[in-house]
Length: 326
Ligand code: NDP
Image (cartoon, rainbow, N blue to C red):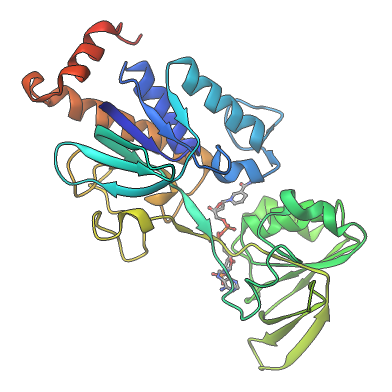
């Protein structure tokens, strides 16, 4: 029996782990069976995380967060959560390998998942020219002509990064104004390899084995055009990853987990949520980290308020043998 189980290994999960571990709560963090570190493992330079004047690579930042969480005693498990039973005093977390972990509190910090365009051949050509990760796949498009879809910071970042490899990058956006921050827009506008195609929606992807082109519709006059490209990078945002808690935790209309005010408290006592999974607006590494802090402090206060006699014996023994955090 644990005091805290943290699900998710992005900035929210790791920061919650650092705080919970320093509060002697001996957290276990379930990272993922594929790769710990969340979405920042797929980015390049992070220039806006405070403390790194020259910027830091996303993977480097996440590896440092993991090391910091482990330094204070967080146990990290590389597996997927397949089932959550959150009602009642004791929460049960079932992993892909069949192990069941029990805890008095759960911090849910699963982040968000990339949106898809919803096109007929998107799945089939995924990994064969369609990608959601420029840092993972950019290398395969040396001297090619490719397209990026989206109008936010991700699309600007991906397009800019992809010009390291590709000869030409079309940036396709469904409107005539961008959602991206001014700084990211400027960088993309000033890159001679990037050409913006405004008011266009991608409706088809062509190719048998590999992507050979796309079909677009103009959102203003409905005209249809095709474009020969060998790659399509989809950067149209992300949705909160909540499938594990459907029917258990209350959700907001936008799909994020509902929490009480500025806290991380969900509708189930002892269950806290943090990071992108509760945040439809800011979604920055640093806001996710702050949110992870809130969740760890909320969990700590919740545990401290539980009557000692209500705690399982091993939890009391564990707490008694551990020095208080400084
Ligand atoms: P956003 O939600 O900010 O932007 C998504 C973009 O995709 C919008 O322009 C949207 O169009 C477009 N879009 C959505 N659905 C579709 C669709 N079905 N077809 C075509 N276009 C679509 O997502 P991002 O991933 O860009 O950014 C998420 C958050 O992460 C933001 O807060 C951003 O600031 C942050 N971020 C920060 C970075 C940095 O600072 N280095 C880097 C990357 C992200 P429309 O505008 O019409 O709604």
